[in-house]
Structure formats: C-alpha cells, structure tokens
Image (cartoon, rainbow, N blue to C red; front, top):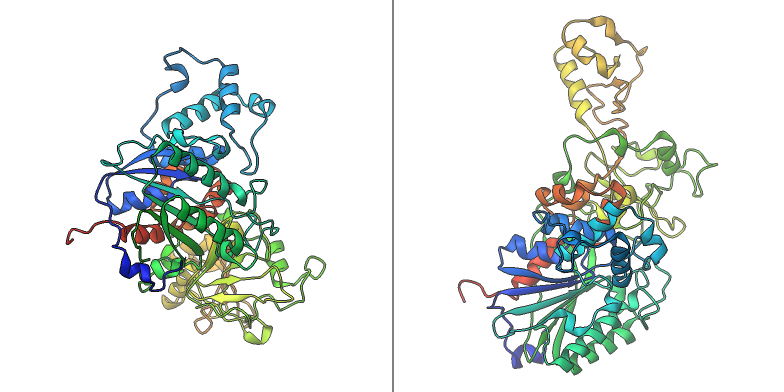
Length: 518
C-alpha cells in the first residue's frame, strides 16, 4: 500500500527498532544504506552484503572497511591459496566486471594475480555473498533475533523497468530486474529455516509500479504478505529531503508481523546546486568547442536536432528551476546531458540561465525541449557529470571586474588571463583594445575580456565532477575520498548514478528508530 491513511494505521502499532541492527545489503553498491545508518549514529553491524560487480565491491570495501588490510588469500586455515584456486573461488562466487553478467573462468584467469587476490580479499572483508542467484537462505545466518534487528535491503536492478530500459519488466529471473524473485526465493528459504529478517527495505525506479509492471509489483506484495510481512510503499523525491536533485524513487518498507509504518514527511529544501560545487575544477571537465557547438546546434552536420531548440523551455516539464535531473549510469557526452549556461539573449532562442543553473537537454527533442534548472541539477545518472551535470565557472569574471574597478583596464579591453598579474603590476602592454566592440568574458584560460555593463557574457560549460555527483547523492566528502582512490572517473559516475540518495534513506530509517523521547 502507499502512504495514505489506512485501517492498518489504526489497527497496528508503529514499528520501532530497539535492538542493535545487523544490516544485510543485497545489490549493495557502495553501501548507501550503511552510510545512512552511519550518518545517523546508529549502532549496527555490516552483517552481510551481496554485490557481484568488482568495482562496487572495491568501493564498498574502501568506504566501510578501509582499515582492513588483511591478505585473506594468504592467511586462510588451509594455507596460501594459489592463483588457480582463487580463480576457481571467484568463478564459483559469480563476480561480474560489467554489472550485466558473470565473468567466465577464462576472463577471470586473465586478471593478474594481484588483482585476483585484491578481489578475493575485498569479498572476505565485506562478508560478501556476491551473486544473489547463488545465495541460499542459510547464508544470511539470521540468528538471535531476540537480541538483534535484521534489516535486509534490496535495490534490485532497474534497467528493465526504467524509461531508459527496453521494457522487459521483472516477470522472471531471465531479466536483470527479475532478480527480485531471487529475493523471494531467499526469503522463502529463510522462512523454512524459521529465521526471517524483521525489516525489509526495497528501492527502485517509480516504473516498478507502472501500468505494465503493476501486476508483478502486486504479486510481490502478496507474496510478502504470505511470508508474514506488512508492506508500505511510496515514491520519494530527493528534493523533499534536502538534496537538490530530482531523483524520484519508489521505496517499500516491509515489517514482519502486524505493524504499521509511516513514511517521512518532506522538509524544506535549503541547498542549491551551487552549494554542492567545488571551488577549483580540472580543465578536463569542461566541454570542448566541438561538443558545445553540437549541443547548441551550431554545426548542423553534427546535430540531429533543429538549431536553437536545445535550450527552449519545455512545455511538458515544469520542474522547479532550483532542481537538477537524475544522474544516470550512462557515461559520455551527449545532448541529453544536464548543462549549465550563462545568461544569453533570449532572441537567440536560449533560456536565460545564470551561474550555477543546470540545463537539461532531452534526447527526445521532437517531444521535449531543454529546460533550465535554477540552482539545481536533475536526477543523477551513473555517468554523473558526463551525463547531466554541467556548471559555470565565474572566477575570471570577478577578476576582470576587479581590474576595471582598479582602473587597470577599461570597457572593451582584452587581456590574456596569464598576464593579469603583470597588469596588476602596471604592465599596460598586456592590454589590447577591441576597437570599441564589447567583449564577453570567457573562462577558457587563454583570453579574458569584460565590460562593467555586461557582467555575464558567454561562459564555458563543464560537467559535474565525480565529487559533486557524490555530494548530490548525500555522500560526505570524507567518504568520497575513500571511494575515489581506487576508481576511475567513469566508474565513480556509474557508482553514484547506480546508488540511493543517503538523505532519503536517513529519513526512512528515522521513522523506524526509537527516539530518545519515546
């Protein structure tokens, strides 16, 4: 059921956790659920994880078990494991290198021995069951339920459910989204053993309860009820819980026994996209002229869409312009990305956007035109900055304004940015006149031109950095620093877009925790 008032709210008491938590994270990623409990200051154990993707396994280990440097492959009771033995172990576990399928034994054997030992050690350190298709109910080791609260989370793959997928649905385990039924199998086995997790938490895209998928979603709720759970579901958007990203996801809380649950109420959004940005950003995150021209429709040979339509206001999307779109898992520069652009003349066909604004350019331009996201970014994907995060850098504008205020340059002057210090030192030879034409300020680093009257001008466009993507997923910088040390930018973008906003999880967990006043 969704979060409207029902008879169950009257009949059943609200469920409150009073015992130490043992957390079981299926489809764990980098462990956003564990981060939520950690940020809440809750006592809990990383009891079991289930994650098959090598990069995600590494990320989970670095964030949550970075202190564990044990070489389990050389400290087992059976002695030092050979490379061939580790290959066999990893093959039997069912690791994946691409998030879509298990690696063959030949693929695993091609990894060098250090890589193999690292993967093996990461799995042991994080109590990882790896491939959910090979997990048994007994592997959860749910014991002493009178002393511990077992929370099992399952954010099963959404590829076959989301709008970006192919609509295969979740009818059976032949699809990635059909991994939901592996969760059913495991819970059924737990019931047969007489030990069940007291709380289940599901997360997925809202399409999980779309018209096409609702029969399977209802089937799942019925099965949970047969297993002894009361379930409550609702779509929650990140902007209602403190994060300026329009990431809308469906959550379902299932409680063993006759209990009720109420989803957290929205809170005012205080943060803006600009509050999430880094001060200094590497040049590699800026869009090239070729890509910028493509997005603007300047070069018709490279553009599939009509010129000047990319930044026009969408009549279909009426998002609050303080929010950004969802970060996805698809890496690459495409006109479907979120862009942030400086204010420009509307007669040119662009929306007015200022520093720190996001611009969403739809891939379906014939149906949906680009929109400005004022001070926010739309939902992050796993490509993160590549896919939808672009921001504007205005530091050089402030510098040029200072040069003008100090009387060192005049309106219409053009100066090399590398020469600004020489100009400050009185070297006027570095200043060039522009024959009275107004020069707009750029942030290319090679040339700076400005005018007192025209402070905005054409600024460059850049992607969100991986750090900014993780901030928009509610991850603190100190934890990003842990996860980033062993990941490429493309992997970090994927990890972010494939995860859950921590702030939303914190709000959900708060409703389950007994407050000090109770």
